[in-house]
Image (spheres, helix red, strand yellow):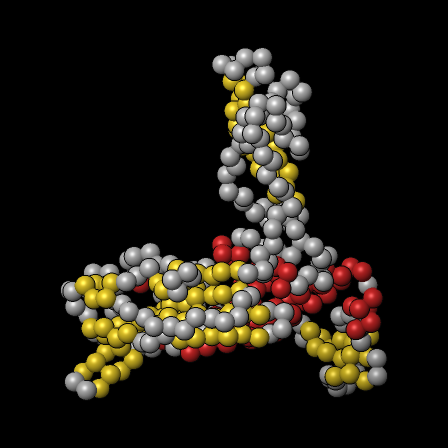
Length: 330
């Protein structure tokens, strides 16, 4: 950097020289190479994590377009500004459940095979400002065998949390969809819409909805909208007051765990994978608690559970052992 001595001031760039003013002085410096080139980003291994993340996240963005179409009629009437971004984040979280492929090559359709997929998808809200558990005071689930919701009756005054804006009518509607993520295909059906007035009476909810014919990943949605009716004119409330929630899924492509339970039918049976001592035998396998996903290590799951192991030489004596099991997913 150098100071310009001249009867006039100059700013701008001439060839490789950049003229500028700073602190009342006219200075000049060589034009620098800011940032990195396309070739450097593509070939430098330090940028591998960024490229891998961009590839995977980009694939989720493309898949999210179809995901939003599964219940488009509901999403158009109940969502807020962060909806699209949260869908991308949701699908990327599912993609991260792919433990068979290396990072940068993981696929959403493999992540969807996770046995714990319901923990990620169920209760996903299109409008996080009005989640279902803040709107309806009863727990809502979907029964796939009977193809219906567990909410058969509702007292619109006592069971619903009404918003501050004037609203005297509530709209209920169901939707079910089958999503073939790999081929970007889907099938969906909407039920009849039930409109109820705000009053202190128990009213039945009777939905009619066609069963799905294809079997990949079934998703059930509940839409709750609000409106204000004055004489013959009905004015819907803004979509920020409405609710669309995933209330159930059924996964036909669920991945099975590679760990198989060991059967023990008599005192001589033992665990093939766990043998604390040759002098001990198991009368029954220990009951394990629900597997918790560990984000720190997605390839393995560790569980510690205390179980009772009867001593071989004395059936009355019971020792307590802490057993550590190592399960591999996929």
